[in-house]
Image (cartoon, rainbow, N blue to C red):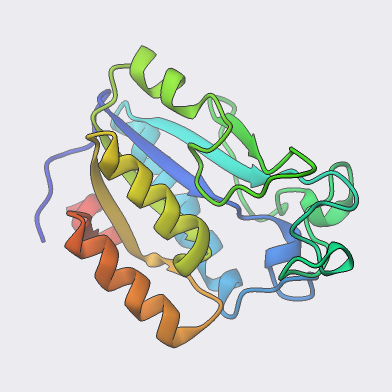
Length: 193
């Protein structure tokens, strides 16, 4: 699919590429390590085109409500200040990148990059109208971010080659929902063309 070139009204959202979601992490997403080089190239292309780059991260306090120890669905992960919460060294985050922390409220979980963050304020200030969304996990943070982006009127490109999910069947269903919401699936080849 041919897309218009990236420019200053575009923003790349790199969602939750953190050590705990990579192989060996407490909540490893299958195939997640294969996405990092692709996201590095997306970030390079975004900045070369004058687009903006945002990197989101889970930034949970200890004993967060989403953790199993408190009855939540997940093992403890991305706890503030721990190695698991850090961005991997292989992710080449440009100095211009804006880091968006989410899930830092002890009693509330947050999957969407918009939930409880200043992302929308930053996007509006930059006059961004189109988002490119990649990272982890397809059926959770990617889906919820795309839902919220479309509800707010943003055009969305879903980076098909640079997303990974936890469960294949749920990831396929999430992908179908994103497309039904108006998200356009693209690959690096489409963006680089």
